[in-house]
Amino acid sequence: MNHIYRIETGQMGYHQEIKTSRKMGSTDQRAAGHHASSWIIRYNLHSIIGSFLLAFVVVTFYMTGGTEDVVQGQVHQISRKGLIQRCNLFSGRWVYDNESYPLYKEQECSFMVEDFVCQKHGRKDLEYQHWRWQPHDCDLPRFNATALMEKLGGKRLIFVGDSLMKNQWMSMVCMVESSLAPSFKSSIWKGNLVTFESKEYNATIDFYWSPLLVESNCDDPINHHVRNRIARIKAIEKHARQWTDADIVVFGSFMWWLEPTMTLLWGSFESPDAVYKRVAMKLRRYEMALETWSDWLEFNINTTRTQLFFMSLSPYHKLAGDWGMPEDQNCYNETQPISRMDYWGRGSDKGMMRTAEGVIQRLESKGLRIQYINITQLSDYRKDGHTSIYKKHWEAPTEEQLLDPKSYSDCVHWCLPGVPDVWNQILYAYIMLQDS
Image (cartoon, rainbow, N blue to C red; front, side, top):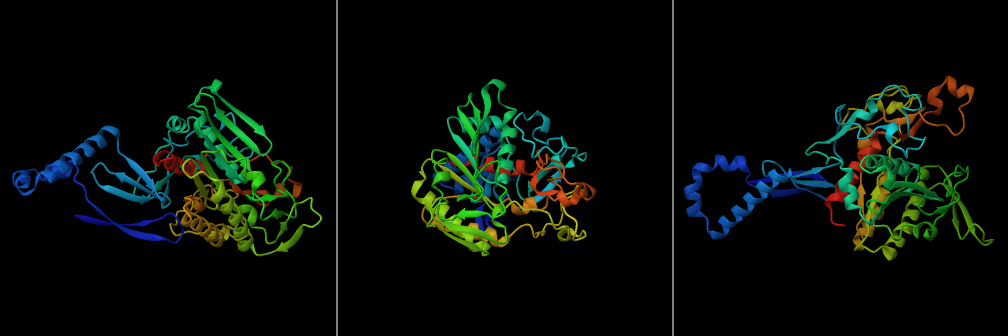
């Protein structure tokens, strides 16, 4: 009996229909028992052998708990009924789960930085830590830190991008730390690069600060809050040589491109002949930078060794009118996710997403595969998950701001434990269930 499943590819706006055949599980076998005699006569030897092989797969499933494979945004699972199931990891809902979540405790992550520790900085409602992402048609694979580190043995995983990528890297480090012996881990900061090293597994999980991917005057990991952002739109080598030897690279760059205007530089900062141009074309300048990035990948990445991922836009929640609150409100004091399944806020820029998807598709047409991890809408539901005022403020709020907390609320970055943990659960599924 044939079944048609409508599935989303994980890239915004695309879908397809896939026809699958139903495989017989143990329940179906019992129901068909009274047909056994005629079945044996009717089917030839090849069919009998095929049935034994199917039975072996089903028995193996019960022994191992199931098998999964991730292909272009879908999980392909053999269910306990023996059915091949496909589902979109990015389409689902948030379910409150205070038994199995959070996956780690804020205070027990020894590498946690002050930017994301909301509980430490006074947040009293901790429900944001207990929401689990539930895809509509399957279960998100449970994160297993030991299994991940075994997979990463002798390898290097690196997150490249801005502070939101640092947010995700910090989440990953906290998620794996609990499974590592204290004497077998360390954290090393060196310029733009921070390395979390597991000596036990001879593996590293790195973060590299490169907010625009291409070179810019914002590249200092500490002093990067410049008023006039300047991007060397055709220069990336200084950064990219830090990624060349990585086995898994996770890229992300959106937020820093949202400025209404930015200066583009052709040439070097030191050259008297350099050309500077102030431009407002947000999508075009973003596309130009991604084309520089994709050109470098095309000619410098060993596709037989390196897995590439690109994280979709992480939404902000600065405009409370999107979810029915007064327009002058934001994420401050929000404690519950948005439950409306068709919600799409103004903090999720579809034009930016389509630009990134287009560059990635063109690169894939040239034979270089990049997995696009579309976490935008699932994160857009989580107006409650931002750090808001509950973080270390490197510049103390003014007296005027203290009287109006929403005026200095951070509605971009995320509390940990929290939303980035789900991004990493999805990334974990790709890493574990695809060939390296």
